[in-house]
Every structure is written in C-alpha cells, then in structure tokens.
Image (cartoon, rainbow, N blue to C red):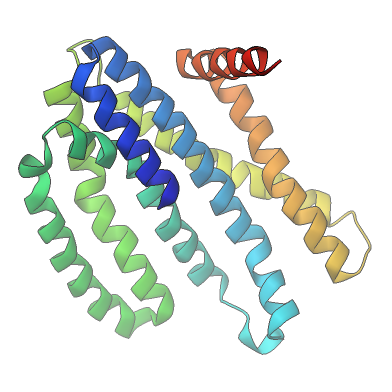
Length: 231
C-alpha cells in the first residue's frame, strides 16, 4: 500500500500538468514496475511459501498445491491492475468504472459460496480470482485506453504483458525447482537459495523481456541520472 500510495500521489501530480504522451509513457513505466513486483512476489509464494510453513508450523499445516496457486494469483491480479487503478483515480474515470466494483463483489460472493462448498479453501481463493478476471480485469483497462490514451494505443498491449507475466512466472518456477533438485542441503540452506533465486531468476527474464522497451530505457536513464547527480 505504501508503494501504491506513492505512485498514486506521483501520478496525480503528473496527470494534472503532463501531456497525453507523457502520461502514457509513465503509465507504461508503472506497468513494467508493478508487473515485475507481481511476478517476483508470485514466484516467491509458489516456490517458498510451503517451505516456510514446514519450518514454522510443521508438515501438518502444508497448503495444497491448488490452493497455493489460487492464493498466488489472488496476490498477482490486483498488483498488475494497480497502474490501471492509479490512472483511473487520477484521471477522473472512477465514475465510469465504479459499478464494476459492485459487480465484482457480488460475483465474488456467489462464487465463494459455490466453489467453497465444492473445493474448500481452493474454491474460495479461486472465486476471487475468477470474479476479478470476469469483471474489472478486462473492463477497466479497456475503458482507460479508450478514454484516456490516443487511438494509437490499444489495451492489447496491457493484456499481452499480463499474459507474458504469467508465462514468466511458470518459466521461473520451473527453472528454480529444476535447480533446487540438484542441491543436497538442509532446509534452511534450501530456503535461502530459493529466496535468492526467486529474485534473480525472474529479474533475468524480466530484463530479457523489457530490455528493448521505452519504459525500461526510461528507468535506466533515470537511475543513471540519479547516480551521476549523487556523485
């Protein structure tokens, strides 16, 4: 929430004075940053969470893999939507999307009851994910691109990046689990290695994916400028 609030304040100041081109440029940077946070966090949940539970509470409290996946994507979806919500709240689009929040809540409640009875905890967690995908996840980006960005921009780029983020998550998990199977060490060491890999492996894939984008170049130039000014 601290990160979200910081970006919200910055976007509010930007959208009050910036050109449409600049607003879109910063939105793309926001997308890259929040997608990166979502990927690293989701990979961490899928790879490390049960190890920490075993270490803390024991094997009796392990979370079923399907429930873990549902929980991971319950974490993932709001974060990739943060840039959209930030621009929704700072560009005057809240009234045009406020009803979708109500529909999301109603659908979530209905699905939680039905899926909870059928699949227990997994169903309740999955209900939130499904309700969001069927409502705000597709609706709000489309409205934002249609109302606030130029006709040259399309919400397709947003959904493409989210789909790519999901692929990077599973690719990262695969590589980490493959590497971990080659290590013979106690649980503490394994957890430490997993935590390290949950950052480095997704970052490696993220750099490969974003390295030629304007958003990535903007962040690199901004960091270089700050470093040079601090010297």
